[in-house]
Length: 329
Ligand code: UFG
Image (cartoon, rainbow, N blue to C red):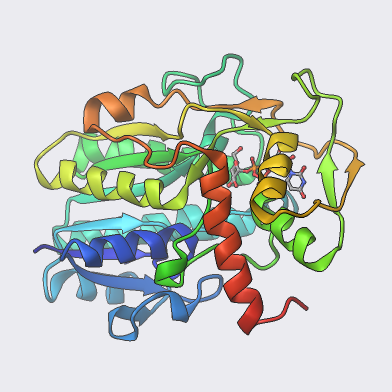
């Protein structure tokens, strides 16, 4: 089986993908500087603790033994942080990607799966949003992903480097059997915050209930992280089989409001979510739902999880296991 280099493989989506690739028999090497990822997410013999900025070391890793392709997760992902420190996001997300593709060119590796985001669309005028919607990011985080997607377009045209960009919607859920789940620090994502609120009794703030949506709260497209991992495996296979560069929305096409997620958490846990209504969070689009038909039609991807409660149940199982061994401070 081909050797695949995975950057950011110790992070949330990266580790689920690494696990899937290993199960499929790929020879995987993970590059992660562990500044936000966790060593316990990756088999130690697979992990290389390395900065993406170290182009020479990356080139060496890609060459010997030779890698067939790269999956590139390593990036900062916090929208709020990117508004405070945009320079960090351009240095790490754009600079890191530039270093990586430079190493790929030097080593003669010409296939890349790239972690992009729905944030490239900003506040889309039409939902469900298709890949034809214009780039209109409203944060340095979203802009950093747009810049890399554009860079990859030129690298295909000028250097023949083929890439698939997957524009993630709201990744959530876990693979508790594999010991994997969401462990951001600080946590900003809705599902883990609701589960933690249930467990600790500390109320979670709902960011606005006066949007122009049926219950007044924001609507998002929640996709199980294992389904997202599957999308990466299929995208990788397509590139290995000679498919051209493309960008795909990675979402389910189903929208759920914040209050619907709260209800799903209450059904799964059997407890009330302590909550309060707060002001809107700046930069939040009222509705962000994918049109995933291109990913379905071109690559045959289908989400395995279609019921939000099933997704939440995996995250709850992970949260309970994690809480048992590491109490929340
Ligand atoms: N929310 C709350 N309270 C919280 C946290 C979130 O009400 O404490 C709400 C948000 O306002 C939003 C929804 O829950 O309506 C989901 O918020 P998340 O922070 O979990 O996710 P986002 O939709 O903001 O962000 C996701 C990805 C980002 C990506 C963005 C694209 O996590 O990486 O989609 O818009 F940039």
